[in-house]
Image (cartoon, rainbow, N blue to C red; front, side, top):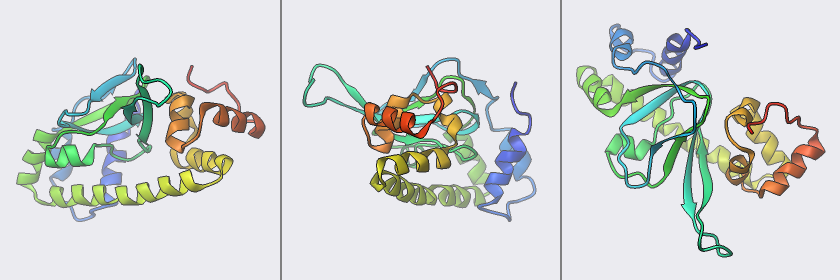
Length: 211
């Protein structure tokens, strides 16, 4: 069941940045958005070297960004390092690649079970030409990413259990229904086993975890 209130929620989010948008903004934006899409499996939507064509509004679920590397102890296989997880109720986009049409440096994956609405770069440019306020709005959204980076630094610098609690509070505990614990662990900056011990000691339940 798709929440029918997703568009008013998106508009409310955008108007938090820019109250004085032209009256026709609401209808013009809606006509340029994709239909909501439900993802029945983890779906890679961006790879290193690709140029981002889409920004996303999450009706439900999460987007994970990650890089791959070869660990010292096993040069034969790549491992993933999660470098970003989308925040509920906020637009998610690979800012530099989308805005500047440059090659992405990382992978972007929509988690299984998520429901997303897309906004193509071409539609963004068209709308911005009609009302330049759209470009100002986009720059304000991207500027907020600096605050997010500050939070992530504090989370990783905290004691392990505190960092995990900060993560759940910031991203909502439902994130664990969409993103695997091993990927959450690399994002917080700890080993899988460490996160498992923290969850056991803290009495966190497992019923909602993604399997």
